[in-house]
Image (cartoon, rainbow, N blue to C red; front, side, top):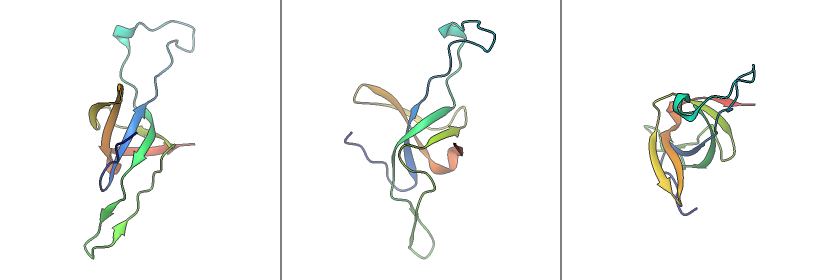
Length: 95
């Protein structure tokens, strides 16, 4: 992919939620919410602090993360729907 986020931004691919509940009920597309779980595709180099030093990000490409429901900006790159968000919008790393 020929896209690299700047500063403290990350590029995230949503991970689709299960189409069945634990009880085996199939959830139709119209009732599904957008997943708030994703995989980091690319990360920026990090923001700069007041002294001008670069502060590295805590996440890296390949990490599975949880983020807020309304976090990020949706973009379409290479025919794929992705999200660009700040690292601060990420709530945590899974596993």
